[in-house]
Amino acid sequence: MLLVLVLVALTLEYRFRGKARYTSAGSAANAPRMQLSGGARIAASGFCLLLFALAFAAPVSQLGFWAWNSLAGEWGARYLEYFRASLLLSLASAGLVTLMAVMLGYSERRAPGVITRWSARVATLGYALPGTVLAVGFFVVVAGAGHALTAMAGWLAPGRGVTITLSGTLLVMLLAYAARFMAVAYGPLGSAFERITPRVDDAARGLGVTGAQLLRRVHLPMLRGGIATAALLVFVDVMKELPITLITRPFGWDTLAVRIFQMTTEGEWQRAAIPALAIVAAGLAPVIWLHRRSHGANEHA
Image (tube, rainbow, N blue to C red; front, side, top):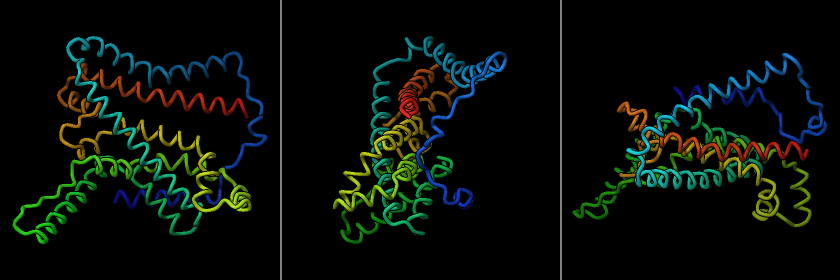
């Protein structure tokens, strides 16, 4: 039922958007800014400051206070293992999902039509579903495939007791992350692809650049910003993802998010502050980079 509702919502969004496409801002980028003064300036600044305080400053300050009180008894070498597992999964997922999103966007660009368009819609459905629902569904499918392969192995090699287990492997985790976060990577990459006008492709083909060379020599250099944005967004989402990690992770692969879950389910809020702050710090770096990149692009424009 959730999949049907999500599909209907995405279909309506696509139809409402119509044939709108991304393009350069042109003269709109040079439009004069509205200068506030007096009470309007104070009200606008106060509203932004209030949002910042409620959404970031107050929670992070509380986490910092708890982390300082529990640092002596909680911090240890095991946190390096939590951070290593989280970093490895985030980097691997960012690379895999971004690569798949590039392939999906390029396929939709090279062969526009009903099949490729709906393939992209279906591939991005996972982000609209609760992580728990997706993780359970993925686990059931993978477990069923493992049982089927075990039965086939028993038929091919009777009496040897061959057991094939797909659940609890890094490959399954990465595939589940891809199903969950494909929309995160496809969003900025789809926008970047649409900003490349067809005239660029025509000019490249006129110079003899076709096929894979067109993607490697023309599109990828123009997609660098979109690729970096997609990879960073996936990195941050995987770093804090819990349901998929909790259900599909190999034995002993505890991440920062899993550690937070373990502590909070036991009511150990102060002990959960250290891994929570680590996730906040890991997520801040990409946000700062994206902000500086967008600010630099606006100044250049």
